[in-house]
Amino acid sequence: MIDANNLTLTFSQGKSELKVLSELSFHAAIGEIVSVIGPSGCGKTSLLNIFAGLLTPSCGTVKINGSFAAKARKEQLSSYVFQKPVMFEWRTLLKNVLLPSELKSSYLRDISWESRADELLNLMGMSEFKHYYPHQVSGGMQARASLARAYLTDPKVLLMDEPFASLDQITRDKMSLALLDMNKRNQATVVFVTHSIEEAVFISDRVYLMSPLPSTFELILEINFQKERKLELRDTSEFIEYTRILRKKLEGNGYD
Amino acid sequence: MTNKTSKFSISFYVLPLIALIIFVLAWEFLCITIPVKEYIVPAPSVVAKTFALHNQSLWTDFYITAIEAVLGFLLANLLSLITAVCFTVSPLTRRIFYPYTVALKSIPLIALAPLLVLWFGYGIVGKVFMSAIIAYFPLVVNATTGLNEIDRERLALMESLSAGKMEILMKLRFPSAMPHIFAALKISTSLAVVGAIVAELTGATRGLGFTILMASYNIDTPLLFCAIILAALIGITFFGAMCLLESTIGKKYKRSI
Image (cartoon, rainbow over all chains, first blue to last red; front, top):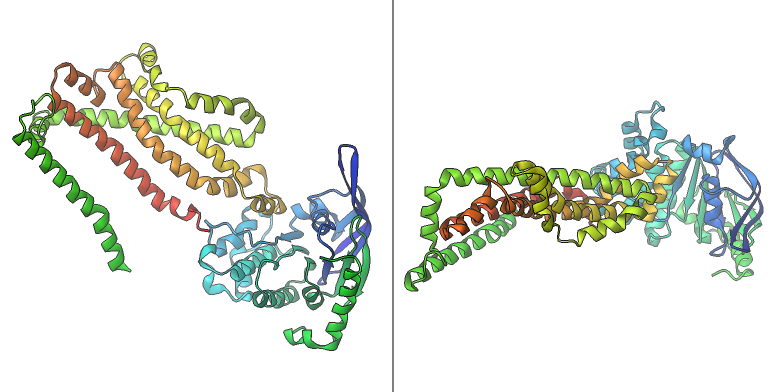
């Protein structure tokens, strides 16, 4: 669960000040997948870094399941997924997934990490590859491993910064489905930053559309589908209608 | 696959060995056909006879020099790892001392050998230090570079996992630096042998360097050749051992992108 109120972020460089975020409020409940979409350089990554407690906002508060963002990160309530899989090539995929469990933030937690990692890799359909090194598997496999790594600590909030952007379209679709499936079982609040309108509509319960700097949320679009989220959904008229609304708004801002 | 590897090792070991045998035979043949004085270039057979004659004392020299080089190597690289870690953990320390490290590296440190004789006498200690001084620098520079050339995204991942400085050092910096570290260790092996022998040349009572010096005073060229061959043997064995270590431990740290 994320509760963010009146977030303002200003970068100052010498005398000049750059206002990046302007009084943003953001709410997402447990189990929800929420996408953030907007023109490049509008502060999407900064917003994620604030949620992760890696960046302090100039104004406003963020609570992750009731804790302050930095504390939540240290207590493994939140977890981050990057654009690239960020695998360590000297570790097998299993060892990569287990990395968070080897850090001191995990020492006090009573979890049998190995079996949890096995279970997650199984869910990702890659149990037979777990003893492979990253360079021996495809980019899609690495992305799956990085998702499993993010879920290892059973986070309440998953922050994803364009996680599938470097993958090809087919792999990307598979990853969207994998994420939906993973989150159904693990019930985290997912904040998903993306450039792809289709991806956002397909996986999200809600889409936040950001304006150019200083950013605010220009549109908050609730997304409800009658049917189950399968790839065919993208050909339905309601899906196309959602993407049309978002695209129209973005193009009005000179989306690139 | 197995066929391919065995073929590879044949061309890897056997062919150079054949070349060596041909070289030695040609050398022997030339020494017989052209009347070269023995104290200028001795024939391989003469060198072999001399070796047999001095067998015991030569091997003793071999072990002494080898021990000096190995101890010097270990001391040097232990210290340089500590230095590199200090430079990594504390940027201030690095800013102050790193320029001196680089500057010292380019000084001919062999010039220190007589000073070490003055300080530590003719025993093994001075030789170990000389070997260590020369073998120290490759790893300091390489490990400092390796520990600090960290992929930014990996660092961001570790930070997002709330990893501490020490955890980042052990889980990310050291594994990332391994290729750099092994490259330096390999260079360091031969430098350690050079250091030990130079120190022995300057003032010693035993060791290959001492034997080399004595043989040259006595114009005993065959003995000189024996000592040089043994010195080469130390260097090669040491280098080979490091390559073996790299191919076992270091293999998985090789960049395979």
